Picture 1 (cartoon, rainbow, N blue to C red):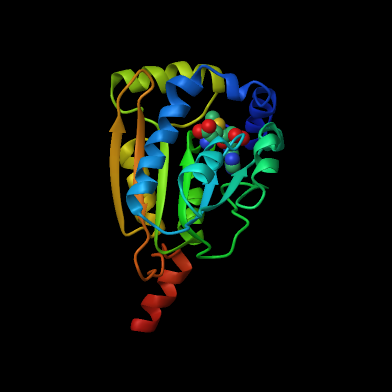
Picture 2 (spheres, protein in one colour; picture 1 turned 90 degrees about the vertical axis):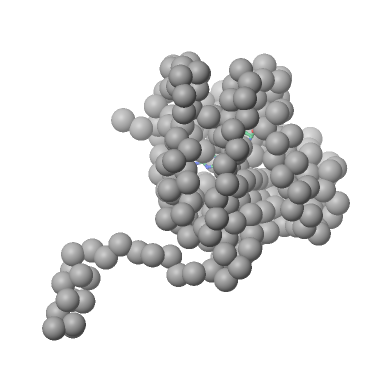
Length: 235
Ligand SMILES: C[S@@+](CC[C@H](N)C(=O)[O-])C[C@H]1O[C@@H](n2cnc3c(N)ncnc32)[C@H](O)[C@@H]1O
């Protein structure tokens, strides 16, 4: 059994009212935002178009509004209640940040729409993570940057925190290993992947992937009929 989108709807609709006051803001979400912001600053992109996937109540879009001059930011989340929890933000900064209700596995944007994608503390909720990563690669422009951050569950402490404690509260969520995440990124067509581990009571892993300057066609697995017809042709 894997965690479903219906479960995400229930969990986050319930959590939306108190989300911004959660103790996890101090332990995990705040430090995550800081790590992402540092990376974005390091890219030195001018007025980047950014999509924050699984943005919750829009705290990170608000940070970008203040800290990255000229950035235009879209915040996407599956759960309407979470977006509505940030209404004060979206309404206050209407010119440069905007909320979108949608699913990470079917992003409602054209190919190559963004310079930067961020996704923090949300990935473990996706039933089809490989599909979400392919969507991320699709909506990034050539040379664009994906910053995917989630609980670091490799090692004993990470397993205890994420596979035991967090899974005990959230259900069958999946914190992918560093190796799994890198594999999904390379399979999706990203050209390079670097990973950084952040220590702390709630350790997290930041995976940074870049799309090639020219997007290559994604390798696809041949199904049986395809391979039969190919071998027939070559005979
Ligand atoms: C723990 S919150 C993280 C919010 C924010 N990124 C942060 O770090 O504060 C996880 C968010 O992922 C969203 N989410 C879960 N499944 C999703 C999906 N399939 N597509 C988009 N968002 C999803 C939830 O609604 C929730 O707002």
